[in-house]
Structure formats: structure tokens, C-alpha cells
Image (cartoon, rainbow, N blue to C red; front, side, top):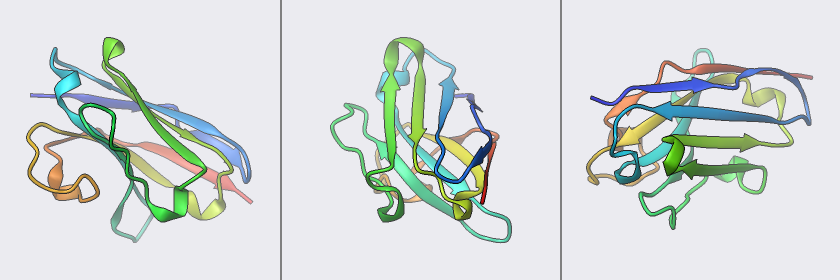
Length: 125
């Protein structure tokens, strides 16, 4: 069982920045692929960014390329999402997810076995 706990959400003005963190339990964090998704009210959960086990593959949603950066610190069992130039339409609950066994592309939610509880990000205009 893997537990994921997100933090770092909050209220920010348009154009501002936030860094989300996701701390994972367990001693095999480095063997997980990780990702961030987001879900706005009344909408589906969408892929934002992912990172392979090695860190060499980092897909991003087209809408966040150049503004968001995913990273991981295996020594701290933590994955991060640096979000810059935030937009009001990016207001959502942000979730991190862990993939234990590679079966699906990193960009699809069905790839992930464990999910955090989410952290709210609100971008004011």
C-alpha cells in the first residue's frame, strides 16, 4: 500500500506561482512512475505532468508546457510540481498519483494505482 499526501495548494493571483509537493510512503518510491492530475468542478480529471521511474521521460499537457515543471527527490520520497504563470482556468483540485507497474501510457489516469487526497489550487483573476 502506498499513501500519497499532497501539500502546497492555495490561493494565488493570475500570473503567480505555486509549488505543490506530494510525499509518498514506502521504501520503493524510486520504482514508481509519478504524475499530477487536476480536476475542476464539473469536469473530468485531466493529466497535467508525469515522470517515469528514471526521470528521463516527463510528458506534459500541452496547456502547461513551458510553465509547469515536474521533479522528484527520491531521497525524500517526494514529487513536486512547480507551477508558474498560473491562469484562472487552472483553478482545480490537484492530485498526485503513483504507478507501481508499467501498463499504460503515463498520460492516462488508468496507469496509476494510488492517488492522493488532492490539494486545492485557486487562481484569482
